[in-house]
Image (cartoon, rainbow, N blue to C red; front, top):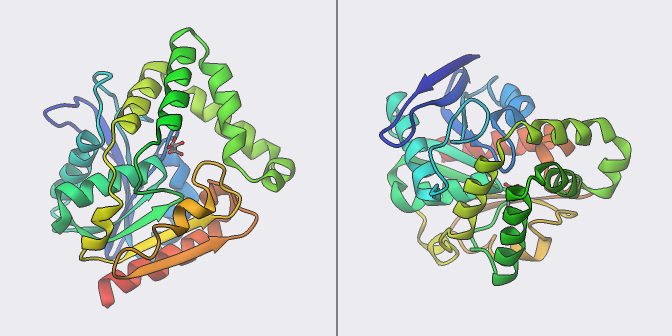
Length: 269
Ligand code: MLT
């Protein structure tokens, strides 16, 4: 695996990992995670594809600049990575917030996308209720409550069954989330609050869309995914039973297989 550092006009230090060989696929992590969340699935995909995994600004090895982060800023980072790699396009998979970034890439640079995989994600913008919850979390983090926020949030990402069977993995995710600066968490939350709704744009997309849905996902409930997963012209839909919001840890083999089938289809259809 190669770890590549670069910068853009807006961000001085950005990092992505690249491994494997073949048609390109770029995996975008969610919140409050970093590219390492994709390690297991990325290794499997690297047997067939060139895999690129960025750390978004403020996560892992990438630094952020201010609280004014937007999905469009992060989409630009993805476009720069593809340009640096000399690629005219790639299949992009985004987990949750990573899916919001991928949808911004689709809106700004549609020609760069060969296929879009939304892994426990949604094209809808935040509801007013969700915005209020995020604002409360921002206040908590500002008052020094990062640990309370992380310990409240992370277990909720997993299905009840997984929490009981694999407490060490849940604890590890809590530790990793604690590595993120509180200011970065606030930047990501502000970017999520102000993100655009892309639901109607799904009907206009010229490439296939994949939906990975966890039936026990407390963040992106089944009905929210079901309302959208038939809107694009070509949709691949996978429903995972007993799975929450984190199939890359809860069901990594199934996720790697489904992604591989989708990526292969996007390049060979
Ligand atoms: C994520 O998993 O990326 C975030 O929790 C998504 C969100 O809060 O909307």
